[in-house]
Image 1 (tube, helix red, strand yellow):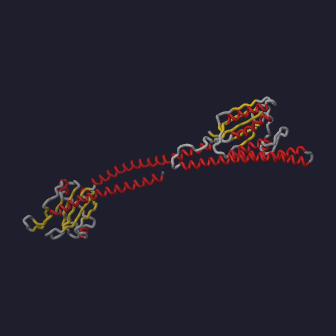
Image 2 (cartoon, helix red, strand yellow):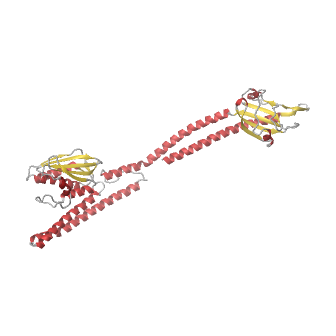
Image 3 (tube, rainbow, N blue to C red):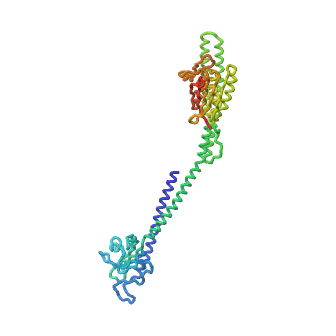
Length: 454
């Protein structure tokens, strides 16, 4: 856009200067033509003899120019005829009444020698004439029949009217070119805006796909953009197909590994002795590692899925109802949820259930029965789920260790020490984080930060 505007302005400026100069030159050529006509009339009517054929020494004009301006003093139109004498600038013998008796036209630069060097040719020059007027001067050296010496014929015209007309033309031209430039710039801007509007809309639609607002680039796009949208839709379909295949492979691998591991674990538990205990411990470690890395692979595949989204509040409410039924027989459960604004998680519902479910289950398992869940907006287009309980909590130095895979701080309850580490891993895969702190209820507080979408 800047290049087009700059080039257009340059062309208009150059064109305006050329047109203005051309008009000025044309005005001067018109003035020169008028002066040429005056000179031709003077030369045609100048004689050295009278009507009877007698020889005379003085110059006479059989007919003077009949333009009224030549009879008005200081009118801006002048003529004169002077005999040529080398070495000086002789006074004219005949002159127009507009010059008065004492005024005369100046000679061209170089004096009479300039006319002698170009006999029979008309010289046009700009000089300061009588009454301090800027005039256009035409001079020509002519040898009249019967004259002892050549005569210099002069005609002059005030240049100011022609210059005023040229300035008026330049002003009008400048205004017209400015209007044209403004219209041209406006059309260039409009053309670029209209031309790029589909790309701006495409950018917005791609951002909507990335945020999970839509699954594909649907809509009517111009023929210039349609091939790009088709390729992007094909890429989105391919991405979903890759994720689906990865999920299928991970599920198949899970089934393929869990059965042999379960057989080994059952056989080792049925036997007694050091070997059986060693096999049981290693098999249990294998199962924990398989569970961890399979869940991590599934989460990684889902995190790379473009367009996934789910509402947070319904997921938390479903988890709360399940946990109240599960732990209601053991303790008096009171799970309070403050959903806050209607926030949407930019990811798979299954992953949100996995992360929030683990944290809420730990709060129910280790707390005294009171669980407080708050959903709120966070900086940078994220959401935060804060889960607190009224349990014993964790010391500050033990909170970091609680996020390490395989570390169990409470051996009295069933588990493998995978819950918090999996939640932290899932959060990192989505570009979020899990932090532990002290809850206002007195127990542990888990803050889960995740990406949000509209």
